[in-house]
Length: 401
Image (tube, rainbow, N blue to C red):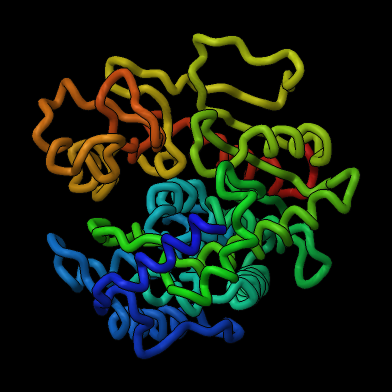
């Protein structure tokens, strides 16, 4: 409690800027009767509220943060149609799904994304964001998707994975044909024991930390309200999971063993003990030089090696999983690939390192044997995307493989 109050007092004394104040408008959770009209309204909102970061054109930043719909590729059958709603993570934007969305559209799946309230514009908009609005947004968009396709799936990353889980296991609205959760926030590492303090600290200041904003599609600064709202979402998702001894919802789950954000052991336990559909699958990115514990053995879990020294990669990060190596912002050689979040070294120090001296990993607050920055892309992206596509295809008919 003392630590949070000190952080609050420090943040309160910091110079206020446009970045950290709520914008002039906010997103609601209206029913989605026309997706094109929804896109127009969100573009107007983002254009009004966006405080651009340096180094990128403002109009490009607006476009990067917008939700989108990708229709199945030309040549796809006009028969039964599959669709998926993808929900992004905390402080993130729909940009995180661009690579997966393109792959799935090529596999004849209609893809839709949404922009959660408080996201895609400025960190200050997170000060007033609401978990209840996020849930209503997810429900309204899934209802709209289910009315336009024959088999509607729901998926999400991090916070979005928890929101998707909450909806998929609820008893309101159309039932998804399957749930795809990538590093879902079912339980957090580190902060999980302190989230209940966030509403108290929120009385004293808006932000835990005000960081330099270098990323045009994701916030670095973190508000106390964001902690309160994600705590609400996690509690709801956990409640949905643990209240059922056996869950027949088809589930595809992916995570990295080195994740500094979510608790992998919790995900594995729930996957193995509660989600019982025979078509379930899980992909874990890990250092395969070490054996997997026999106590967690499961033939439905596939492992992909995350220790890739030829690419200077020690391990995979939370944020890297859904990003292809050729991504325009996070991929190899792209503007955000190097030194976006260096570990235990300054930004300038990181940028001055020779290419061969910088390695990539998850985020760490302790020293590593080499200089590292957070990994921003997934060298195994094609394998992950193919696994997601196979899962959708196997469940399109409603019959387990």
